[in-house]
Structure formats: structure tokens, C-alpha cells
Amino acid sequence: MSTGTLTFLGTADSKGVPRFWCGCPVCTEARDTGLNRRSRTALLVRTGDRVALLDAGPDLHAQLARLPGPLVPDLAVFSHAHNDHILGLGDLLDYRSYDLGTLPMYAPAAVAEQIAGRFAYAFRAEAPVQALPPEGLEIGGLRLELFEVPHGANGRSHAFALSRPGWRGVVMTDAIDVPPEVAARWLDGLDLLVLGTSFVDESAAEHTGRSVYDVREALALPWARAARRVVLTHLSHDVDVRRVSLPPDWQFAREGLGVEL
Image (cartoon, rainbow, N blue to C red):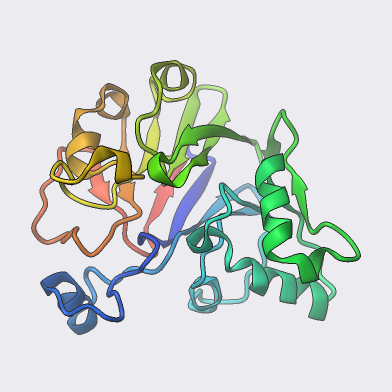
């Protein structure tokens, strides 16, 4: 039984598709017909009468403005302090400042501290981004938690865990080399896995310089193969959705895609 929807506002890696400087076939197609056009990461969780924003990339204003009507999330949660996941915070801060709206925002404690350093002007009088409670948050019947994952050459990130009795899902956009003990705790037996795969096959690259799984690796991960449904996101201009085949119950994310929870 569905109790909500996960909607993809942005599905790109940090550079977006098309990359503004690039004339490769995928970027060219993205400009012409738009099948591969992708903006930076943001997702909406709608459950009951509540809406949560998961990450807020630099394209957030355009993503929200494209919706059929005005929408203000009830809360926002950030996974890590990289530009492609937090620069939309400026738009959320403008809403709080100029419309005098309330918009609770959360991140893991260390991430909230990093965000405060990046947006110091907004943290002088208060801390608009609070540390996420250890027990997570309750959102209209769903429990939202964050757990730490390796981000390879880019350090550490966090994944979003969504659960209710009898159902579990994870959104993990920026991760690689997840340890077995973390997978056993959070990733086994999922009903929904949203997984970042920036490239189709990065096997030729030095592993020490990488930061996100590729499609080839995702297809071999036991916990990904065991999930009932898999959606691949955080896609660079290397991924041409017209050319790459996926197994049944797997798909590439697209902007506006809604997945029942």
C-alpha cells in the first residue's frame, strides 16, 4: 500500500546535463530534444499532508518554479555540504527572510557546521539548519533517518533512509565502496533503492580518484540486485538513457518522475 510519493526534481551529477562547455553526443541531444537533460540533485517526499525536500542543488529555484503551483516544503534535509546538494539553500533562506515563512532545515551535525561556514551571513542571528535528531524525523507516517556512507575521493556523505512498518527505502546519491556492515544494517531487503551512478563504466579510471558508483558496479552489487525496485540517478553526460539497457524493475531517473512509496 502506497503512503506517499518520491518525486525527482533533479537527476544530474554536479555539472548538470548538458555541461555548458560540452558538445558531446549526450550534451547535444540534451540541448536538442531533452531526453538526457538533467539538473542537479533534489527530491521531494510527499506523504500524508507533509512534503520534505531532500537536498537542494543550485537549480532548485527553477525546479520548484516549474511545478504546477506554488509549493513550500514542510522541511528540508541535506545529505552533505557539496555545492550540487546545498546551493539551493540560498533560495530557501530567501523564503524564510522575505516571506517570513517557517521552514525547518536539518543535516547531520558535522554537515550543519559545514553549511554554517558556507552561508555565514545567514547564521549570524540564528542557525537555520539544525542538527538532525539521532532518531531521525517522522514525516506523515514515514521515518526519515540519515546514515553515513563513503564518498570516495570526495570524503563522506550521507544517505536518506525512509521506512514504515513493512516497507523500507534508501536514497543514496553520492557513495562508493559501502562497507559490508553498513550495507547489512541499511541496504539489505529494500523495497526501493535510489542509487547514484554518475558514469556507465569507470573501470579505466583510478579507483582512488572516484567518488560515486558506476552503472556496471551497481548491477553487480548484491544489495542492489536484491532490492524490489532500483532507480539510478546522479547521472553525468556519460549516461545516454537511449542506449543503456537495465534489468526489469530498474530504471534511470528522469525529472518529474514520481515513485510510489
